[in-house]
Length: 493
Ligand code: GLN
Image (tube, rainbow, N blue to C red; front, side, top):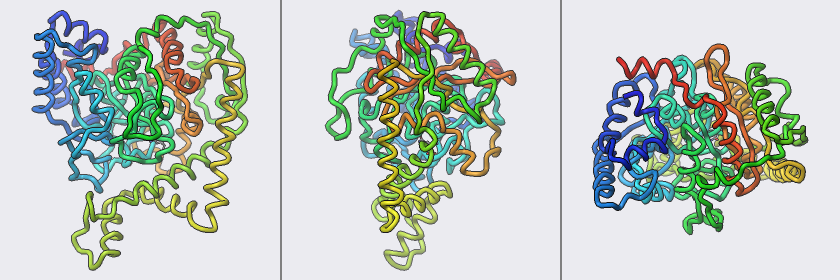
């Protein structure tokens, strides 16, 4: 069983094609495994085994009729619980939406269905995707499969943990300031945040609309290419989605051999970087050099302002987006409200958790009259400067290389101060502010056996190049073949 659950989309689609396994068998294997070990990992908020099995049977029937839809047909894929699936719960890990069932499909959901994927389970995350550890989930934190006493990162912690523990072949997460890449790094999987606008946000529970992007979390770069190919592309339901030809990302992996010019942003290698992570990233740099890449230092001088800028813009947009949860149309509705204002007040007080409230309050403050110019408007200007830093660097280099996270997975409950958690995103947030694509790939382990992630940052809409660059590294290393000890024990027991 453990064999099967740790295989890649590429491997499994091959076995499905030859008839060696059926999608129904595969899906049953994931259901059984998740039932047996997810009490400890808590990667899932919910799953609908009957529905998943019905999708798998439909996939097997298509295949038998010679109508297979490609590499994702019959593959169990999990979705972060902020992505809408018709008839399934959509909670955003919040009490506010604890009983909400989605009446429609997100565009990414519809596209995965179109590709034949078996939509498998709703994955745990920080409430409304706000956090870096999944500890802000109203339904309890997820655990890191490499050490169950540690966090899987966040906010897409369940999406990362599910892949790492062998509870899904691939998953989707969302990334507003690092929420795909940071948990991917902490759980030893691949996580890709696409260029802003490449993937439709329609049907994604909105956190900060100018930053949010949906992206894949997978075992390998090739699997990320397959998933991205299925979900990318223009959507008339999202006016910020980009009109472009979507390349065959998987085929392009082999067509783009480099060598690349790689920049190392000085500001990303300073104080606060765990020395073991620094050393692993240095080794990756040495690898690219040995491949004939030109590697040189570059500067992104506005990096020190990224965190402040992000926490003004993201909270401002969140305060506006979350205004829709008023207890009237959907979501939690307080039972003992006296009048309309009291209903809003009580429903929101009861429905939202502390971190979400903190962000709404902060966001409302920076948007309020008298403070708007000083905070929000200024942050928008600094955001432009941050983006210019990246574009200027790209005049000299093709891609940037950095650590994904300054620290490996930390203990559950260890970072109780919100600021300490915000600092987890110092290497990922600039990418969102600049709207760029970036990928985290496994690049080693600490002495304590915790995964380390390497971040590669690409140019706008050049995902094919970025994936190829990451693929070259991955092919020469076997990090993605390692299994957490817990997962091996869990499957033999
Ligand atoms: N950790 C960051 C935050 O709390 C980013 C979250 C995300 O990317 N969704 O806002």
